[in-house]
Image (tube, rainbow over all chains, first blue to last red):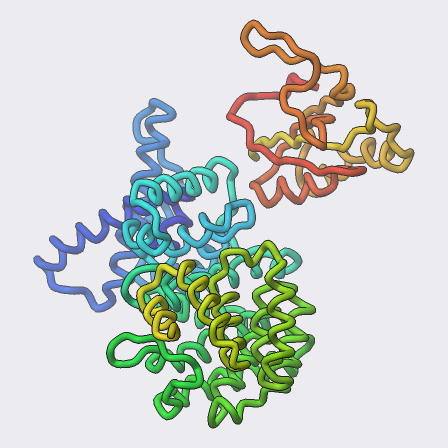
Length: 394
Length: 117
C-alpha cells in the first residue's frame, strides 16, 4: 500500500503520513459501516485519494491560488475504483520500492534500514534494535536516506534490464543481510530473531516470483530455505547452541529442503552459477546429508573452490578450511586457518579463533585449543554463543 | 528535468601540473554535449580548472597556497547537466572522459544556471 501511494506522491514521507491517515479513517468508517469486502483495496484507494489531496494542497500553496486542479490527476482520482486499486497493489509496486531502497547511491546500512522500515514495515525502534543503535540514531539515518532519495531524485522504478544485474546484486545482498542479522543475532539473549528471518524469506520469495529468470534470485531463495529448514534444531530446549554435527536431522524441514533443491538444480543448469546459488548448493548438501560424517565433503570443497572464484572473501576461505579438514584432516586445514590469521580483514571475526580451536582440539592440542576458545569468547556478544564457547573450555 | 553538477576528479602529475590530455580524450570532451543530448539530457554549462597547484585557499584570515582539500585526485572541472533523475544523471556522467580518476554527481538546489555558459 505504501508502495502504491509513493507512486502518487513521489515522496516517501508524505506517503507514510497519508497511509497512516488511511488507517485512522478505516477505524471510524469500518466501525460505522462494517469491514469492506477487500480491506486492502479499500485502504489503498483511500490512501491514494489522501495523497492526491495532499498533492493538490501543496500545489495550491505553491501557486498561492485557489484550488488549481490538474484535470489528468483529477480524472485519475474520480476513476479510482477498487479494481484499479487492486492493480496498484500488485507486488510490482513493492519491487519498485525495494529497488529504490536498495539503490547503490545509498550506503549499505541505509539500504538495509530503509528496506526493513519501508518494505517490511518494521517500526523504527525495532530497526534500531536489530542494528544495535539508539532509536534517534536510526531515525536520523532513515531520515537522511529518505532525504537523499528525494533531493538527488532517486527513481522509484525497477531498473532497465541493462542495469538490472548491478542493481539486483544490491537487493539480493540486502535480503541476505536481513536474514543473516536475524539468523545469528550479534548480541542479546536469543540466537535467532524470527521476525527478521521471516521478513527476509518473504522478500526472497517475492523477488523470485517477480523475476523468475534471474538465477541468483532463485539461488538466494534456495539459500534461505536451506538454512530455514534447520532453524528448529540450532539450539536445544535450554537455548544452548548446537553444532551441525549435534543437530537432530530428523527435525529438519524436508519440504523446504526439497524446494531449495529444485531451485538450485534449475539455477545450476541455466548457466554459470553466482555466489548465492553456490552458497545454496553448499547449504543444501549439508541439509540432505544423512549424518555429519556422511556429508559429501569433497563436493562441498569443490563448491567452495568455485565460490572463492566468483566471490573471493576470507570468510569463504575460512569455511572452505572446515571442508578441507573433513577431506584431508585437521592438520591440513589448520595450516590454511593460520594463513588466514594474517588477513587483516578477519581480525575480530569470532569464527576464526572458534574454527582454529576446533581443529586444535581434534589434533589433541588441548591447551592451545583452550586459548583459541577464549579468544573467540572475547569476540562474541551473543549469550548462546558465549555459553557454547565456555562449555568447550576445560 | 532536474539539474546536477558533474565534478571531474583527475590525478595530477607529480609536479602538480595537469598532464596533457591525450588527443582522443580531448576529442571525447568536445563530443560530450552532443552525446548527452542523444541520451535525453542537456549540458547547461561547464568549467575546466587550471591545475590545483595554481589554487589559493582562504579560510578566515588565513591565505594559503594550494587547493582547499588535498586529495590524490584533484578537482579538474565541473559541468552542469539536466537529467530526469539520479539514474539518468549517472548514465550521463558515466560518459565523461576520464584519464585516471572519476566523477562525482551532485544534485543542484533549484537555481537557474542557464546563464553560466
